[in-house]
Length: 328
Image 1: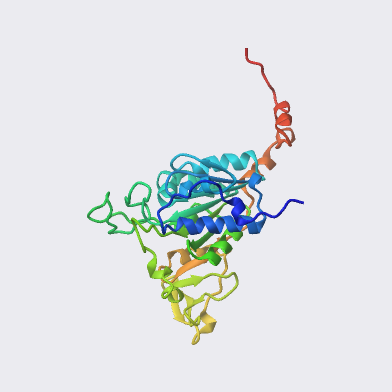
Image 2: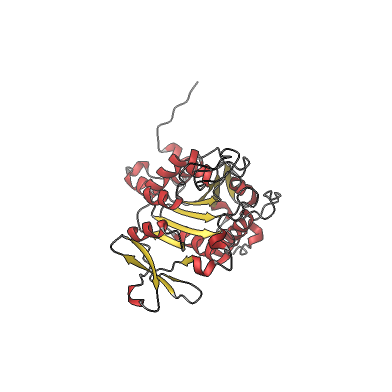
């Protein structure tokens, strides 16, 4: 029996080249730890990336990997998953790479429920190309491409995923070891596409953009930790809760001690609740917002084929099961 792998076994000899203090370091460490603890194998794990700071990820994880072109990682990952459904295929992208030039590819991967796991690092800025505003940048963001402040309304990554029909949606913070580990495990176990938005700090071009809810002193009052079947409560003593405002069809914050019967319980299978949680600005919902069952695209694809076109056990068998020609 082979010796269990450790997190260091998933680290390559490549020098990790991100800015000192970048949130990507924490995500990389969390992923290497997750791969070891979950018993993942190097030969069946693949990381696919596009362009951007986050897209250096495949160089730093000792598994198979593809550093593709801008926005096309979901398309390449879809091909991999169809070619070999037994692979664990992870897509690493950023808010610019995934939601701008790659938005169309990402939309259809989620719509089809391809069994890939998408990690979207959201720092609300283009980091690699020196700080231009991105699709998720807030109105007023000053950058080299918007010196007077961005006029664009920002895109919500969570709303995009739900609108595309994602069967799994989760959120985490780059430096939150436990929270990130939990959503990675849930995404890995999910049948079909899984979309994880990771709030990631760009220390150079958009430092502390998420400090309103990531700062340790503010976290208890501004973070909502989701647990399936448990009350939607937050605060230092869980004294605040979320209830449904039926008049305005939105969530409202109430005193959980005074009105415990009104506090909602989390149900990741409820799409409406997931939509309300995505739209909630304060507190920010973290954890698994949406998880529903559904057959993955690759499994449905192979089941739809006639018997003699089903996936073969070997390359030789695949070649000899179809017509071949000799070209002279």
